[in-house]
Image (spheres, rainbow, N blue to C red):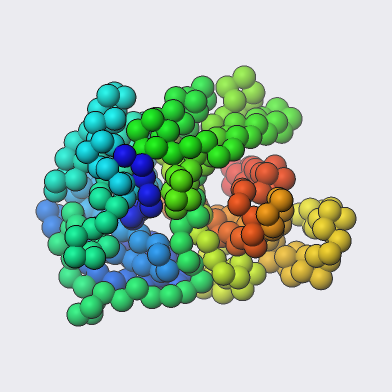
Length: 339
C-alpha cells in the first residue's frame, strides 16, 4: 500500500488564464495538454518530473466558494492501490471512486487519488481526463524545476499527530523528522512524513493553540480550514532561478540583511556565495549531509493562501531546521504588512 511518488497535483482556480501564465511564463512550465468536459476546463502543465493540473469551471465551484484557489488533489502512485483503499476505509477516511480510481479524503477538502505505481502502456498523464495533447507525442520539457521536493500542509491545532498517523498507517509513509518552533507569543509544530522512495514527502504544520494566533491561524482562516500551504519545487540553481522567475513575475519574500551577517559567521567557507544569496534573499542551511538553499514566493492567489517554494539541495536531506524560524518570521512580516 506504500505511496511511491506524486503522480500529479491538481489546483482548482477561479482565473485559469492568470494562473497558467504564472506557471508557464513566470516559472517555465509547459502546457502539454488540455481537457474540456462536463462544463470544466483543465490544463496539464509539466516541467521536469512535476505534473500540475490547473482546473476551473463547474467541478470547482463548491471548493472555490469555501477555500478559494488551492490544491484539491495530490495524486499518489502506490504499489498496492487496493490495500491503500482498504486501509483508508478502515481508518474512517472518506473513500469514493472517480473513473475507476479510488480517491481518499481525511481532512479539509484535500483529496488523494490513488493510482498504480506502474501505469499501463507507460502512460504518465492523469487518466481521469480526456486529454488533447499539444503535440502528437507528449513533450516532457526540461527546465529549472526538476521535481516536487515536498508538499506542506497546514492543519488545525491538536490534529497533527492524528494526520501523521493517517499517512503512516494508510499510505506507508514514515516519520522523517519533527520540529517545534517557539517564536515569542506564537509557536508552530511540524512533522515530516516521507515514503521509503523519498519521492513523497509531506511537511505537516500546525499552530500551537496554547499560543497567540499567527500566520498559520491566518492561513486556516483565509483557506476555510486545513489544506496545502505551499508546494516546494526542487531546482538546479536557485540563485539563477530566483533571478529568472523574478523578472518574469514571481514575487519572492525578502530576507533581512542581518540574517546574512549571521550566516557569514556560521558558514565562513561560504562567504563569497553568501554575497549572491544576500542579493537574491535566498536562505542557506546545512546538515551532516550537505547544504540546503531555499526561498518562498508570495502567494499569487486572491485569498493569499497557497504559495510556492524553490529549494536547491547540495547534499542536504533535511528541511533547513535552522531556517524554519527565519522563514516563519519572513512570512509573518509579510502577513502583517499586508493587513
